[in-house]
Image (cartoon, rainbow, N blue to C red; front, side, top):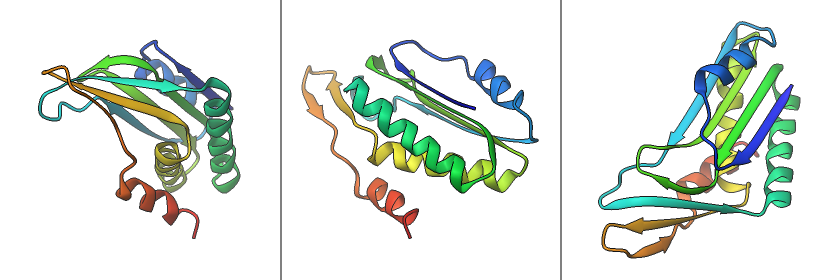
Length: 147
């Protein structure tokens, strides 16, 4: 079972983890991304193009499901203006085996950071704004899965 949601609403980590656990298996892996308090950052605004983003997330999830024996995948990504400490993204994977759950969760996050079209704008305490560029380390991590 694959669940993908993109929107402004926050998510309930416990409820989403229980939903994946209810699909069977004995190994659940998760990642929660939050807005970092880098320096004087006040907000992070995330934008997306729904059709493109949904397609990319579904392809990432389908690849994970074909590469690992998974019972369930949840990908929830928030958009809109978020403050420091707020949740941005949740990935939960469930499998019979720890290694499959952990590796697939890592794969999904690495690909999500580089393949899914999200645009991020930071606003600082002084009012300055900057669009966030892709990080070389994220690109490299994503490429490592392609080998």
